[in-house]
Image (cartoon, rainbow, N blue to C red; front, side, top):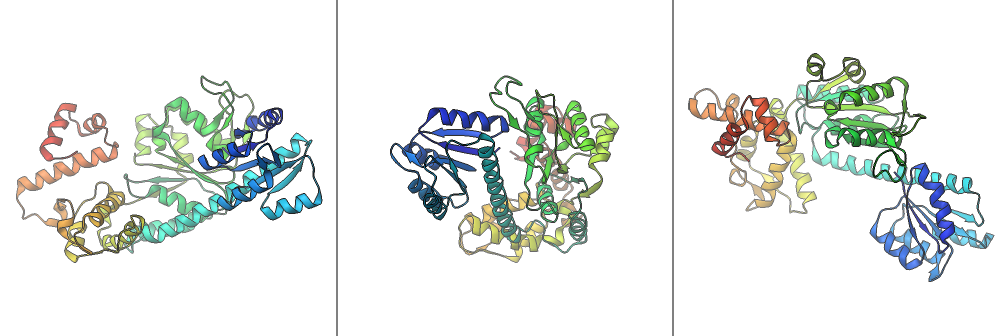
Length: 446
Protein backbone atom coordinates (compact mmCIF):
# COMPACT_ATOMS: atom_id res chain seq x y z
CA UNK A 1 0.00 0.00 0.00
CA UNK A 2 1.52 3.33 -1.09
CA UNK A 3 1.84 5.97 1.65
CA UNK A 4 1.02 9.56 0.68
CA UNK A 5 1.78 12.68 2.76
CA UNK A 6 -0.52 15.64 1.94
CA UNK A 7 0.93 19.02 2.98
CA UNK A 8 -1.49 21.94 2.59
CA UNK A 9 -2.98 24.52 4.94
CA UNK A 10 -6.43 24.25 3.33
CA UNK A 11 -8.53 21.58 5.16
CA UNK A 12 -11.03 21.31 2.29
CA UNK A 13 -8.29 20.59 -0.22
CA UNK A 14 -6.80 17.90 2.02
CA UNK A 15 -10.26 16.41 2.51
CA UNK A 16 -10.89 16.31 -1.26
CA UNK A 17 -7.53 14.69 -1.98
CA UNK A 18 -8.04 12.16 0.82
CA UNK A 19 -11.49 11.30 -0.54
CA UNK A 20 -9.94 10.68 -3.96
CA UNK A 21 -6.96 8.63 -2.76
CA UNK A 22 -8.22 6.42 0.08
CA UNK A 23 -10.75 4.43 -2.01
CA UNK A 24 -7.88 3.66 -4.40
CA UNK A 25 -5.97 1.93 -1.62
CA UNK A 26 -3.56 4.72 -0.64
CA UNK A 27 -2.66 5.29 3.00
CA UNK A 28 -2.97 9.05 3.48
CA UNK A 29 -1.51 11.28 6.22
CA UNK A 30 -1.92 15.04 6.44
CA UNK A 31 0.11 18.08 7.54
CA UNK A 32 -1.06 21.71 7.52
CA UNK A 33 2.27 23.51 7.96
CA UNK A 34 5.94 23.22 7.06
CA UNK A 35 6.86 22.39 10.67
CA UNK A 36 4.26 19.62 10.84
CA UNK A 37 5.39 18.32 7.44
CA UNK A 38 9.02 18.14 8.62
CA UNK A 39 8.00 16.12 11.67
CA UNK A 40 5.88 13.71 9.59
CA UNK A 41 8.62 13.38 6.97
CA UNK A 42 11.24 12.52 9.59
CA UNK A 43 8.95 10.04 11.38
CA UNK A 44 7.92 7.86 8.42
CA UNK A 45 8.77 6.46 5.00
CA UNK A 46 6.67 7.97 2.21
CA UNK A 47 5.98 6.81 -1.31
CA UNK A 48 4.58 10.15 -2.56
CA UNK A 49 4.47 13.67 -1.09
CA UNK A 50 1.95 16.26 -2.29
CA UNK A 51 3.25 19.67 -1.18
CA UNK A 52 1.65 23.11 -1.40
CA UNK A 53 3.91 25.88 -2.64
CA UNK A 54 2.62 28.46 -0.12
CA UNK A 55 2.50 27.41 3.53
CA UNK A 56 1.75 29.62 6.55
CA UNK A 57 5.24 29.11 8.02
CA UNK A 58 7.45 28.61 4.98
CA UNK A 59 7.98 28.26 1.26
CA UNK A 60 7.06 24.94 -0.32
CA UNK A 61 9.92 25.05 -2.82
CA UNK A 62 12.47 25.39 -0.01
CA UNK A 63 10.85 22.52 1.90
CA UNK A 64 10.86 20.45 -1.30
CA UNK A 65 14.63 20.90 -1.66
CA UNK A 66 15.14 19.84 1.99
CA UNK A 67 13.09 16.70 1.54
CA UNK A 68 14.79 15.75 -1.70
CA UNK A 69 18.21 16.14 -0.07
CA UNK A 70 17.14 13.82 2.76
CA UNK A 71 15.39 11.26 0.51
CA UNK A 72 16.34 11.36 -3.19
CA UNK A 73 13.86 8.58 -4.02
CA UNK A 74 10.49 9.90 -2.84
CA UNK A 75 8.68 11.88 -5.60
CA UNK A 76 7.21 15.24 -4.57
CA UNK A 77 4.31 16.89 -6.41
CA UNK A 78 4.15 20.67 -5.94
CA UNK A 79 0.71 22.31 -5.77
CA UNK A 80 0.48 26.00 -6.67
CA UNK A 81 -2.19 28.60 -7.35
CA UNK A 82 0.32 30.70 -9.31
CA UNK A 83 1.63 28.35 -12.00
CA UNK A 84 4.25 30.05 -14.15
CA UNK A 85 7.04 28.81 -16.36
CA UNK A 86 9.61 30.27 -13.94
CA UNK A 87 8.06 28.47 -10.97
CA UNK A 88 7.86 25.20 -12.87
CA UNK A 89 11.53 25.43 -13.86
CA UNK A 90 12.55 26.33 -10.31
CA UNK A 91 10.51 23.45 -8.86
CA UNK A 92 11.92 20.93 -11.31
CA UNK A 93 15.45 22.08 -10.52
CA UNK A 94 14.70 21.58 -6.83
CA UNK A 95 13.64 18.01 -7.63
CA UNK A 96 9.85 18.16 -8.04
CA UNK A 97 8.31 15.14 -9.77
CA UNK A 98 5.49 17.30 -11.17
CA UNK A 99 3.86 20.73 -10.73
CA UNK A 100 0.07 20.84 -10.46
CA UNK A 101 -1.90 24.07 -10.81
CA UNK A 102 -4.86 24.90 -8.58
CA UNK A 103 -7.73 24.45 -9.07
CA UNK A 104 -6.95 20.96 -10.26
CA UNK A 105 -8.85 18.16 -12.00
CA UNK A 106 -9.13 15.25 -9.51
CA UNK A 107 -8.53 12.60 -12.18
CA UNK A 108 -5.33 14.35 -13.29
CA UNK A 109 -4.00 14.53 -9.73
CA UNK A 110 -4.87 10.86 -9.16
CA UNK A 111 -3.02 9.88 -12.35
CA UNK A 112 0.05 11.94 -11.37
CA UNK A 113 0.14 10.39 -7.89
CA UNK A 114 -0.25 6.94 -9.46
CA UNK A 115 2.76 7.53 -11.72
CA UNK A 116 4.78 8.81 -8.79
CA UNK A 117 3.89 5.84 -6.56
CA UNK A 118 4.79 3.41 -9.35
CA UNK A 119 8.16 5.11 -9.79
CA UNK A 120 8.86 4.85 -6.06
CA UNK A 121 7.95 1.17 -6.06
CA UNK A 122 10.29 0.44 -8.97
CA UNK A 123 13.21 2.41 -7.52
CA UNK A 124 12.90 0.83 -4.09
CA UNK A 125 12.46 -2.65 -5.52
CA UNK A 126 15.58 -2.18 -7.64
CA UNK A 127 17.49 -0.96 -4.60
CA UNK A 128 16.28 -3.94 -2.58
CA UNK A 129 17.31 -6.36 -5.34
CA UNK A 130 20.77 -4.79 -5.54
CA UNK A 131 21.16 -5.23 -1.78
CA UNK A 132 20.00 -8.83 -2.07
CA UNK A 133 22.54 -9.50 -4.80
CA UNK A 134 25.27 -8.02 -2.61
CA UNK A 135 24.07 -10.15 0.31
CA UNK A 136 23.90 -13.24 -1.87
CA UNK A 137 27.59 -13.03 -2.66
CA UNK A 138 28.37 -12.96 1.07
CA UNK A 139 25.65 -15.05 2.67
CA UNK A 140 26.40 -18.09 0.56
CA UNK A 141 23.25 -20.16 1.07
CA UNK A 142 23.39 -20.96 -2.67
CA UNK A 143 27.08 -21.81 -2.51
CA UNK A 144 28.36 -25.33 -3.06
CA UNK A 145 29.53 -27.73 -5.69
CA UNK A 146 27.76 -30.84 -4.42
CA UNK A 147 25.45 -32.68 -6.74
CA UNK A 148 22.23 -31.73 -4.88
CA UNK A 149 23.06 -27.99 -4.92
CA UNK A 150 24.13 -28.16 -8.56
CA UNK A 151 20.74 -29.66 -9.41
CA UNK A 152 18.91 -26.89 -7.53
CA UNK A 153 20.89 -24.15 -9.30
CA UNK A 154 20.30 -25.70 -12.71
CA UNK A 155 16.57 -26.05 -12.03
CA UNK A 156 16.28 -22.41 -10.90
CA UNK A 157 18.14 -21.28 -14.03
CA UNK A 158 15.77 -23.24 -16.29
CA UNK A 159 12.50 -22.45 -14.50
CA UNK A 160 13.20 -18.83 -13.52
CA UNK A 161 12.64 -17.24 -16.96
CA UNK A 162 9.21 -18.89 -17.26
CA UNK A 163 5.89 -18.05 -15.59
CA UNK A 164 5.47 -21.59 -14.26
CA UNK A 165 4.08 -21.98 -10.74
CA UNK A 166 6.72 -23.48 -8.43
CA UNK A 167 6.39 -25.47 -5.20
CA UNK A 168 9.51 -25.31 -3.00
CA UNK A 169 9.79 -27.90 -0.25
CA UNK A 170 12.44 -28.41 2.39
CA UNK A 171 13.13 -28.30 6.08
CA UNK A 172 13.16 -25.07 8.06
CA UNK A 173 16.28 -23.03 7.33
CA UNK A 174 17.17 -24.63 3.99
CA UNK A 175 16.70 -21.39 2.02
CA UNK A 176 13.23 -21.70 0.47
CA UNK A 177 12.71 -17.94 0.35
CA UNK A 178 16.18 -17.50 -1.15
CA UNK A 179 15.19 -19.81 -4.02
CA UNK A 180 11.94 -17.87 -4.50
CA UNK A 181 13.93 -14.62 -4.78
CA UNK A 182 16.30 -16.28 -7.26
CA UNK A 183 13.35 -17.38 -9.41
CA UNK A 184 12.00 -13.83 -9.37
CA UNK A 185 15.36 -12.29 -10.31
CA UNK A 186 15.75 -14.74 -13.19
CA UNK A 187 12.31 -13.94 -14.59
CA UNK A 188 11.04 -11.17 -16.90
CA UNK A 189 9.21 -9.91 -13.78
CA UNK A 190 12.48 -8.98 -12.03
CA UNK A 191 11.70 -5.24 -12.06
CA UNK A 192 8.17 -5.76 -10.68
CA UNK A 193 7.36 -6.39 -6.99
CA UNK A 194 8.35 -9.51 -5.09
CA UNK A 195 6.09 -10.01 -2.07
CA UNK A 196 5.97 -12.80 0.50
CA UNK A 197 3.20 -13.85 2.90
CA UNK A 198 3.66 -16.30 5.75
CA UNK A 199 0.35 -18.17 5.71
CA UNK A 200 0.98 -19.51 9.22
CA UNK A 201 1.28 -15.99 10.65
CA UNK A 202 -2.38 -14.96 10.32
CA UNK A 203 -5.79 -16.14 11.44
CA UNK A 204 -8.03 -17.32 8.61
CA UNK A 205 -9.92 -14.00 8.42
CA UNK A 206 -6.79 -11.86 8.49
CA UNK A 207 -5.02 -14.07 5.95
CA UNK A 208 -7.94 -13.70 3.52
CA UNK A 209 -7.74 -9.92 3.90
CA UNK A 210 -3.94 -10.00 3.53
CA UNK A 211 -4.16 -12.03 0.32
CA UNK A 212 -7.20 -10.52 -1.38
CA UNK A 213 -7.68 -7.13 0.32
CA UNK A 214 -10.91 -5.74 1.75
CA UNK A 215 -13.40 -2.94 1.26
CA UNK A 216 -14.18 -0.32 3.86
CA UNK A 217 -16.59 -1.68 6.47
CA UNK A 218 -16.06 -5.31 5.42
CA UNK A 219 -15.43 -6.24 9.06
CA UNK A 220 -14.83 -4.58 12.41
CA UNK A 221 -11.80 -2.32 12.18
CA UNK A 222 -11.86 -2.05 8.37
CA UNK A 223 -12.06 1.76 8.40
CA UNK A 224 -10.71 2.06 4.87
CA UNK A 225 -10.33 -0.03 1.74
CA UNK A 226 -7.07 -1.94 1.42
CA UNK A 227 -5.55 -3.88 -1.45
CA UNK A 228 -4.22 -7.37 -0.80
CA UNK A 229 -0.83 -8.75 -1.76
CA UNK A 230 -2.21 -10.27 -4.97
CA UNK A 231 -3.02 -6.75 -6.21
CA UNK A 232 0.20 -5.29 -4.78
CA UNK A 233 2.27 -7.96 -6.56
CA UNK A 234 0.61 -7.29 -9.95
CA UNK A 235 3.03 -8.22 -12.75
CA UNK A 236 5.45 -9.54 -10.12
CA UNK A 237 5.94 -12.62 -7.97
CA UNK A 238 4.10 -13.69 -4.82
CA UNK A 239 5.62 -16.20 -2.39
CA UNK A 240 3.05 -18.10 -0.32
CA UNK A 241 5.23 -19.35 2.52
CA UNK A 242 3.91 -22.20 4.70
CA UNK A 243 1.16 -22.75 2.13
CA UNK A 244 0.10 -25.98 3.87
CA UNK A 245 -1.32 -23.92 6.76
CA UNK A 246 -4.17 -22.44 4.69
CA UNK A 247 -7.70 -23.41 5.69
CA UNK A 248 -9.88 -25.40 3.23
CA UNK A 249 -11.98 -22.32 2.40
CA UNK A 250 -8.91 -20.24 1.60
CA UNK A 251 -7.50 -23.09 -0.47
CA UNK A 252 -10.67 -22.95 -2.57
CA UNK A 253 -10.37 -19.18 -3.04
CA UNK A 254 -6.70 -19.47 -3.98
CA UNK A 255 -7.58 -22.14 -6.53
CA UNK A 256 -10.06 -19.76 -8.17
CA UNK A 257 -7.36 -17.10 -8.48
CA UNK A 258 -4.99 -19.59 -10.07
CA UNK A 259 -7.68 -20.68 -12.52
CA UNK A 260 -9.03 -17.31 -13.72
CA UNK A 261 -6.50 -14.72 -12.49
CA UNK A 262 -9.11 -12.66 -10.64
CA UNK A 263 -9.35 -11.67 -6.97
CA UNK A 264 -12.31 -10.40 -4.99
CA UNK A 265 -11.71 -8.22 -1.97
CA UNK A 266 -13.44 -9.13 1.27
CA UNK A 267 -16.77 -7.27 1.28
CA UNK A 268 -16.71 -6.59 -2.48
CA UNK A 269 -18.92 -7.95 -5.24
CA UNK A 270 -16.74 -7.10 -8.24
CA UNK A 271 -13.47 -8.90 -8.91
CA UNK A 272 -10.18 -7.52 -10.20
CA UNK A 273 -7.75 -9.05 -12.69
CA UNK A 274 -4.21 -9.70 -11.47
CA UNK A 275 -1.11 -10.97 -13.23
CA UNK A 276 1.00 -12.65 -10.57
CA UNK A 277 3.46 -15.53 -10.63
CA UNK A 278 2.88 -17.83 -7.65
CA UNK A 279 5.68 -19.55 -5.77
CA UNK A 280 4.57 -21.70 -2.83
CA UNK A 281 6.84 -23.00 -0.07
CA UNK A 282 6.33 -25.46 2.77
CA UNK A 283 8.24 -27.82 5.02
CA UNK A 284 5.25 -30.19 5.07
CA UNK A 285 4.56 -33.01 2.62
CA UNK A 286 1.62 -31.57 0.65
CA UNK A 287 1.01 -34.85 -1.17
CA UNK A 288 0.60 -36.52 2.21
CA UNK A 289 -1.82 -33.72 3.07
CA UNK A 290 -3.81 -34.62 -0.04
CA UNK A 291 -3.98 -38.22 1.13
CA UNK A 292 -4.96 -37.10 4.65
CA UNK A 293 -7.67 -34.80 3.32
CA UNK A 294 -6.09 -31.62 4.73
CA UNK A 295 -5.00 -30.20 1.36
CA UNK A 296 -6.95 -30.01 -1.87
CA UNK A 297 -5.70 -32.32 -4.59
CA UNK A 298 -6.62 -29.91 -7.42
CA UNK A 299 -4.78 -27.06 -5.68
CA UNK A 300 -1.74 -29.26 -5.09
CA UNK A 301 -1.37 -29.99 -8.81
CA UNK A 302 -1.86 -26.29 -9.63
CA UNK A 303 0.96 -25.34 -7.23
CA UNK A 304 3.35 -28.22 -7.96
CA UNK A 305 3.77 -27.57 -11.69
CA UNK A 306 7.51 -27.39 -11.01
CA UNK A 307 8.53 -28.93 -7.67
CA UNK A 308 11.91 -27.95 -6.19
CA UNK A 309 13.08 -29.94 -3.17
CA UNK A 310 15.86 -28.39 -1.09
CA UNK A 311 18.25 -30.80 0.62
CA UNK A 312 19.00 -30.43 4.36
CA UNK A 313 22.46 -29.27 5.31
CA UNK A 314 23.37 -32.69 6.75
CA UNK A 315 23.19 -34.01 3.15
CA UNK A 316 25.59 -31.28 1.95
CA UNK A 317 28.55 -31.89 4.25
CA UNK A 318 31.06 -31.40 1.42
CA UNK A 319 29.68 -27.88 0.89
CA UNK A 320 29.95 -26.83 4.55
CA UNK A 321 33.56 -25.49 4.44
CA UNK A 322 32.70 -23.22 1.50
CA UNK A 323 29.47 -22.15 3.19
CA UNK A 324 31.37 -21.31 6.36
CA UNK A 325 33.79 -19.08 4.44
CA UNK A 326 30.97 -17.15 2.74
CA UNK A 327 28.81 -16.86 5.85
CA UNK A 328 31.70 -15.81 8.07
CA UNK A 329 32.55 -12.97 5.70
CA UNK A 330 28.91 -11.82 5.75
CA UNK A 331 28.62 -12.14 9.54
CA UNK A 332 31.70 -10.03 10.29
CA UNK A 333 30.55 -7.39 7.78
CA UNK A 334 26.99 -7.24 9.13
CA UNK A 335 28.09 -7.14 12.78
CA UNK A 336 30.92 -4.67 12.02
CA UNK A 337 33.51 -7.02 13.47
CA UNK A 338 37.17 -7.40 12.45
CA UNK A 339 37.75 -10.16 9.87
CA UNK A 340 37.69 -13.66 11.34
CA UNK A 341 39.25 -16.88 10.11
CA UNK A 342 38.37 -20.34 11.41
CA UNK A 343 40.59 -23.23 12.38
CA UNK A 344 40.46 -26.57 10.49
CA UNK A 345 39.43 -28.26 13.74
CA UNK A 346 36.45 -25.91 14.14
CA UNK A 347 35.45 -26.52 10.52
CA UNK A 348 35.64 -30.28 11.10
CA UNK A 349 33.47 -29.93 14.22
CA UNK A 350 30.82 -28.05 12.28
CA UNK A 351 31.05 -30.48 9.38
CA UNK A 352 30.34 -33.39 11.73
CA UNK A 353 27.19 -31.79 13.16
CA UNK A 354 23.69 -32.59 11.88
CA UNK A 355 22.30 -29.00 11.84
CA UNK A 356 18.58 -29.56 12.51
CA UNK A 357 18.16 -25.82 11.79
CA UNK A 358 20.15 -26.10 8.53
CA UNK A 359 21.88 -23.05 7.01
CA UNK A 360 20.05 -20.65 9.33
CA UNK A 361 21.46 -22.48 12.33
CA UNK A 362 24.97 -22.48 10.81
CA UNK A 363 24.84 -18.71 10.37
CA UNK A 364 23.63 -18.25 13.96
CA UNK A 365 26.48 -20.42 15.26
CA UNK A 366 29.01 -18.40 13.27
CA UNK A 367 27.55 -15.11 14.54
CA UNK A 368 27.95 -16.29 18.12
CA UNK A 369 31.47 -17.60 17.51
CA UNK A 370 32.57 -14.42 15.72
CA UNK A 371 31.40 -12.30 18.66
CA UNK A 372 32.84 -14.51 21.41
CA UNK A 373 36.10 -15.50 19.69
CA UNK A 374 39.14 -14.67 21.83
CA UNK A 375 41.30 -13.89 18.86
CA UNK A 376 41.17 -13.31 15.09
CA UNK A 377 40.63 -17.03 14.50
CA UNK A 378 37.58 -19.02 15.61
CA UNK A 379 38.60 -22.17 17.49
CA UNK A 380 36.58 -25.18 18.67
CA UNK A 381 36.42 -23.58 22.14
CA UNK A 382 34.48 -20.65 20.65
CA UNK A 383 31.68 -22.96 19.44
CA UNK A 384 28.83 -24.20 21.63
CA UNK A 385 28.89 -27.93 22.50
CA UNK A 386 27.86 -29.84 19.36
CA UNK A 387 27.15 -33.56 19.28
CA UNK A 388 28.60 -35.17 16.11
CA UNK A 389 26.29 -37.11 13.86
CA UNK A 390 26.30 -40.86 14.47
CA UNK A 391 26.76 -41.27 10.71
CA UNK A 392 29.98 -39.23 10.93
CA UNK A 393 31.40 -40.46 14.25
CA UNK A 394 30.98 -44.13 13.31
CA UNK A 395 29.59 -47.18 15.12
CA UNK A 396 32.43 -47.65 17.60
CA UNK A 397 31.19 -45.13 20.18
CA UNK A 398 29.25 -45.85 23.34
CA UNK A 399 25.74 -47.18 22.50
CA UNK A 400 24.10 -45.09 25.21
CA UNK A 401 25.76 -41.91 23.89
CA UNK A 402 24.64 -42.67 20.33
CA UNK A 403 21.08 -43.33 21.46
CA UNK A 404 21.06 -40.07 23.41
CA UNK A 405 22.38 -38.26 20.33
CA UNK A 406 19.63 -39.77 18.20
CA UNK A 407 17.01 -38.76 20.78
CA UNK A 408 18.42 -35.23 20.97
CA UNK A 409 18.41 -34.92 17.17
CA UNK A 410 14.80 -36.10 16.83
CA UNK A 411 13.56 -33.80 19.59
CA UNK A 412 15.50 -30.78 18.28
CA UNK A 413 14.25 -31.39 14.76
CA UNK A 414 10.63 -31.65 15.93
CA UNK A 415 10.99 -28.37 17.81
CA UNK A 416 12.60 -26.69 14.80
CA UNK A 417 9.87 -27.92 12.44
CA UNK A 418 7.11 -26.63 14.75
CA UNK A 419 8.72 -23.28 15.47
CA UNK A 420 9.31 -24.21 19.11
CA UNK A 421 5.65 -25.08 19.82
CA UNK A 422 6.16 -27.88 22.33
CA UNK A 423 2.60 -29.21 22.24
CA UNK A 424 2.83 -29.77 18.47
CA UNK A 425 6.35 -31.20 18.75
CA UNK A 426 5.15 -33.66 21.41
CA UNK A 427 2.29 -34.76 19.16
CA UNK A 428 4.67 -35.43 16.27
CA UNK A 429 6.99 -37.42 18.50
CA UNK A 430 4.14 -39.47 19.96
CA UNK A 431 4.80 -38.13 23.47
CA UNK A 432 2.70 -36.39 26.08
CA UNK A 433 3.42 -32.72 26.73
CA UNK A 434 4.82 -33.49 30.20
CA UNK A 435 6.98 -36.34 28.86
CA UNK A 436 8.50 -34.00 26.26
CA UNK A 437 9.18 -31.38 28.96
CA UNK A 438 11.02 -34.05 30.99
CA UNK A 439 13.14 -35.05 27.99
CA UNK A 440 13.95 -31.41 27.18
CA UNK A 441 15.20 -30.90 30.72
CA UNK A 442 17.21 -34.15 30.71
CA UNK A 443 18.78 -33.41 27.33
CA UNK A 444 19.52 -29.80 28.21
CA UNK A 445 17.46 -28.46 25.29
CA UNK A 446 15.64 -25.12 25.41
